[in-house]
Image (cartoon, rainbow, N blue to C red; front, side):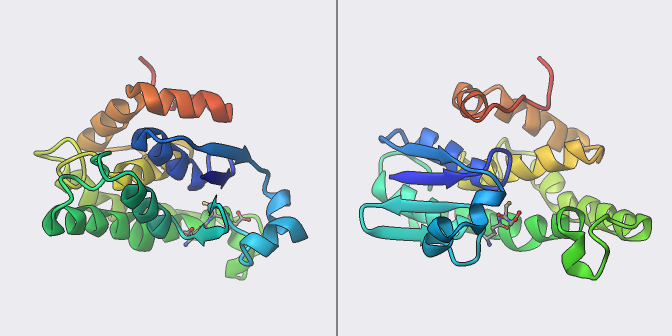
Length: 206
Ligand SMILES: N[C@@H](CCC(=O)N[C@@H](CS)C(=O)NCC(=O)O)C(=O)O
């Protein structure tokens, strides 16, 4: 399996999931500019990361890629014990990150697509940060009595981690449960390896 990944973008979560899955994989690190080349657009016409290539099979969209990696590595525990309930629980939290949380960052990263000049105007920025804080509150409450979003470590945590890196870089102050969760994820040796492989620094100290 070969993952096309842009360091620090959501595709880093797929890199972490591949590492957690334990099977062989290859990562091609790409730039934002490479996503617009004919070579890449042939694989991913939307010009976004991630893209996973497995033989002749080309797959896009984070949730689909997590499911594929999980199905290819059934003993990895990525979807818990594999029961209908635990798969659904993992998918519920993958959906939360994919559909609710990730999109609220988009006005900050691509403000030009929201009618702005490309530089995020202060009122847009403030509203976007408020939306991020409001959306993070669900995860903050969820983590009050559990270590991982689904109740076991799943791809939702890898994806959540990437959004928390973005939030931290945007100076969003994380509440206690999310702050502890971020430290927990960054203490994971496999996450550290992925960060090193992508030339990224952890966002927590210690
Ligand atoms: N729904 C897509 C979202 C992918 C996405 O938004 N990727 C971002 C990076 S996190 C991207 O490549 N955006 C285009 C750009 O930055 O030029 C998925 O799940 O794969």
